[in-house]
Picture 1 (tube, rainbow, N blue to C red):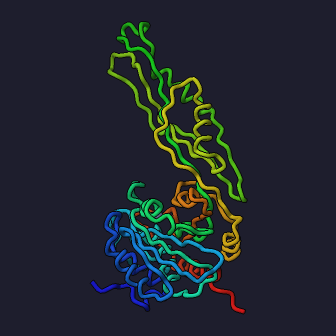
Picture 2: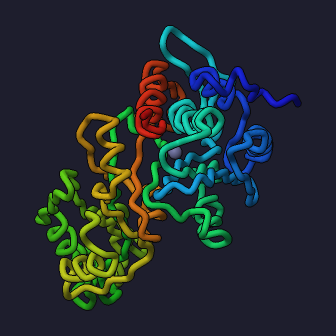
Picture 3: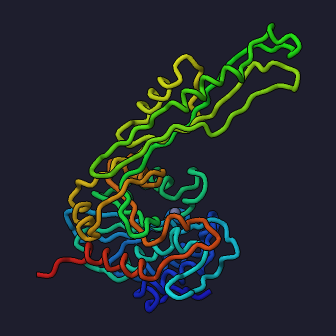
Length: 359
Ligand SMILES: [Zn+2]
C-alpha cells in the first residue's frame, strides 16, 4: 500500500484527519497506521524518530529551554458501520473521527510543518489506549523509555470540543462485605441475614454528600456509588454473605491512600476490600508553557471528571491536560463525527502557541 500521508495531505489537518480515519486501526491492529506515521516523520529533517511496538516518538532538539509533549493515540474502538469516513456538510463521520484521529492529526500536522517551534517538542503517537492498561503504548513507554516522556508540560489531544480540560479525577473500586449465618427460611430466627445487613451500607451511600473541590479554577465533583450488588444462596436459605461493590471518583487533591482512608471511614464497621485504584492528576496550570497555552486558547479551563492518560504524566511530575477538536459525547458512538471548523480552530490555536515569536 502506498502511504496515503503524502505532503499535500500533511499540510491540511482536515484532509489529514480523513486520511488517518481511513487507515483502519482498531486496538491491537495499529501496525499499518504506525508504519505510515513513522515513515513520514522520518522524512522530516528536524525530527529524531524512534519506535516501541506500534508507538512512534519524534522529537526536535533545538536546545530550547522547555520541552512540551503532544500526544495522541492511534487506535480506535471497533468499527460499527462507520468506516471509511464520509463528509456531510461541515462534519466528518467515521470511527475515530472524534476519539481521537482529529486530535492526532493536529499533532502529526504540526510535526510535519513546524520545523522551528518555540519549545522543543516531543510527539507521541501511541497504540492501544482504548483497551486494558497492560497494552497502553504510553504505559509501555513509561517502562521501557521513560526519557521519551520527560517534558515541562504535556497536551493530550483527546476530544474536549476545543475546551481545555485539566487534570483528572482518581478512581477506585472496593467490595464492602456483610456477613451473616445461614439457616432455613422456615426457621429464619436461627440465622442472620447478610442481605438485610447490607441495608446499612446502602443507607450510608444514600446519605453520602460528595465534595465539590475547586483547584486552579477547575471544579471537580466527587462521587461514591454502588455499582454492583450480589448475595443469596437459594430461595429457602437465609443468606450468609452480601457484597456491595462501590466506585469512588475522587478529586486530585486526594492521594489514592487518602481516598481509600476516606472510603474506609464511610464504611466503618464493615469489611472492605480494595480491588482497583488509579490516582488523579492535579491540573498543573501554573507551569509557564501551560499558562501560555491557556492564553492561546483564550477560554477558561474545565475539570476532567473521567480518568485519562493525563494521570500517567502527572505520576512522572509532568503537568498535562486534554485539548482536542472532537466532541467527547460522540466518542465510541456509531454516529461519531467531528466538526471541520473545530479542527481548523485547534490547528490555528496550536500554531499561535507553538510558532516561534517573530522579532
Ligand atoms: Zn481517546
